[in-house]
Length: 200
Image (tube, rainbow, N blue to C red; front, side, top):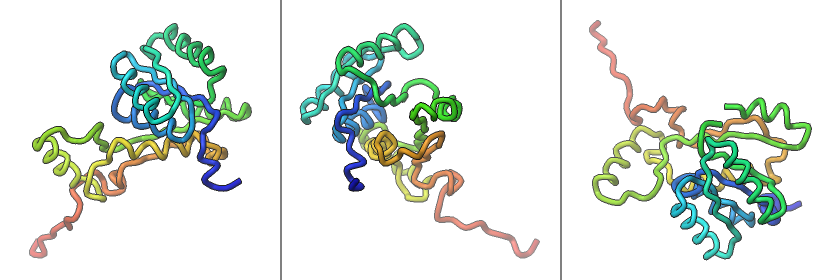
């Protein structure tokens, strides 16, 4: 199979929680661009409706389902809505809430060909700066990162597509940090060397 073909998600159905804005929206749109049918979930109706509209405008298939992931009944309804609309659920992107069970899920469900991985973003903008003050703050905070800038919201999309695709069939129980080298640089200002007082 060609490498690029393994990254396609045609025929796959995905649920993305927290899909109304920021990183969740970016991942939902990226998954749709890769060919998946995307069910967008969040508590705010207007936001997920906007995400769905943008996906459909680009030729994708999408559905909005209002969901509070802290309510198990609403989560069950979300899954039912996905299955009713598309006949199945292949991929879950749990972007809302807190996901610490990844390694356990990967171990227990691995024999059933179910994979579980985590994307850990560093300093990532949820959208472009809306004014000069925000732009200056982003530039200043970007100096804390080795690549000298903050991440942009769309940059999580390609990694999400990869982990959802057949290209990552042998990857599970892992954490993927996308932070521009922030942890490698100690999350401190870069480009400076320590000074020593040789007279001491």
